[in-house]
Length: 454
Image 1 (tube, rainbow, N blue to C red):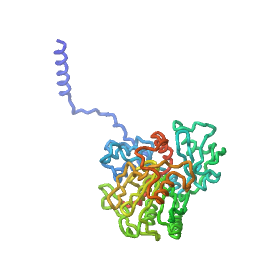
Image 2 (tube, one colour; image 1 turned 60 degrees about the vertical axis):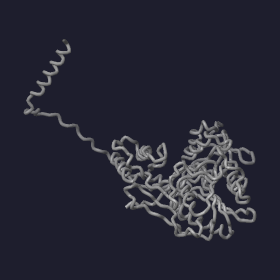
Image 3 (cartoon, one colour; image 1 turned 180 degrees about the horizontal axis):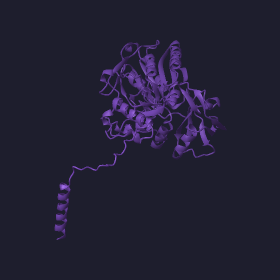
Image 4 (cartoon, rainbow, N blue to C red; image 1 turned 135 degrees about the vertical axis):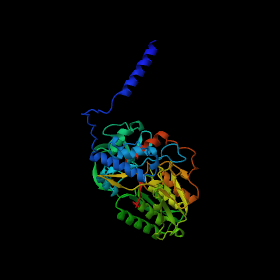
């Protein structure tokens, strides 16, 4: 009975509502809510998304519902779109790289101007944190700190373990002043307080020539493809002139902490390393998304110097990235390329260029780089021919340093010191490997190409 009454009541309500006169609208209707006026920041964020929908390599995957105004700044938007970088053959998004940065900060980075201690650190083993490199004009360089020094304390704390990685990163890379306890190679201890300061980076750390079995071998440590491009090109010319006058038969390029930089400098280095037979042939192809296939451009080799190598050796690590990987990959169709190091390289076969938006630059991944053989999808990195631990306990150029010693042994004897390891070397656990990746995140990783989109 109650249910029948309910149905009848509903029907009466519908009938009355349907019969209500509608030709006398309310003479004083409530005004519609005002449309929010977008702020300048909103417009900037909208522009970031518009560029991304146009040039991002995986632009089709960005959903229509993506709202850039909910993110703090252009860098947060660039980080957010990474998850849409779905690539056939890979189970996870492959973009770890798109970013945004204030133009003032990028101008310093791109010109090789840093404002820190000028030091890099990695774990050699649990509890054994080593200086991996030092910029010579930095506070650490001027204080006499060098590669291989062991860090025993930071601001008095002796908790130098992988579990304390975040605090270590803050103290070493992001503090204005830190007191370091060091143990030097002669086992003497010293305490040095470093204050951050601006300095010019010089990425060619070492160049020398070794004699191995009667043949000369050229060795260069190159820490970056970023900075004063004219100065770096001049350094390349100087180094390879030295190699030529020394009649080197083999060349070792040490890129173990080189996160990349300008593609133009990577191509310049390849021009010195490619054999004469490669002159004028394909160096790499830039491949954009399907909106800009007409802009896919192939760069060719312009042979420099007089070296005519049949093989070249590279030393790399998980922090060898982007433009550095491009150097290695682009040479593979032309000569015997050997890679030595503890792990695969970083895995960044893509690049970007700065796009100005307000007082920011955004760097959405915009192109792939592909070698003459069509290879260019190494998102899991390049695999070493020989796996050997990074000799963080030795100075640059020390012939007993693990990686360099292995290459010199191969040159002199035709084999590396040990067979290729089927797994990570003892002492380089997965935990340490992962933490060392974190230790390297402060440093730029990328391939910066020219903006060829018209």
